[in-house]
Amino acid sequence: GVVYKIELDGKTYALKTSAKEMAVLQRLKHHNIVLFIGFTQLDLGQAIIMEFINENLREHLDLNRLDKRQFVQIAGGVSKGIAYVHEMGFVHKDVKSANILVRVISSAEVIPQICDFGVARPVPED
Image 1 (cartoon, helix red, strand yellow):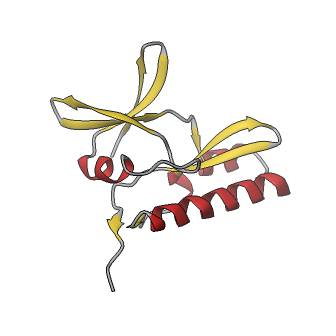
Image 2 (cartoon, rainbow, N blue to C red; image 1 turned 90 degrees about the vertical axis):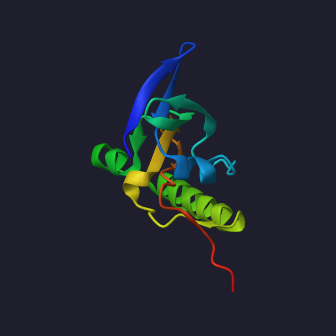
């Protein structure tokens, strides 16, 4: 779905219409998962409000060369985020560079955050 950049109370957020995604994302709270803020009702249906992060991993890699530290931070963070999603009983099903947001803290620190849970499903039971 389309993500819109919105301003609320002087802060920037991301807005996306996806009831399926909201059902998953509102259950996930982790350093490496995009932060679910809440939801709102629109004429189009329910929309989720998330923290806004300006670039995804694909865009970040187009503009920056990763050093070893940043590579480890991104790979480790994505791995931790995926493990957490699985522990919470879901499978993301669409992990790719466009669905990993990159929060740049400094030239020495980046935090990857997994987003777009629109096709996520519960882990099948054995």
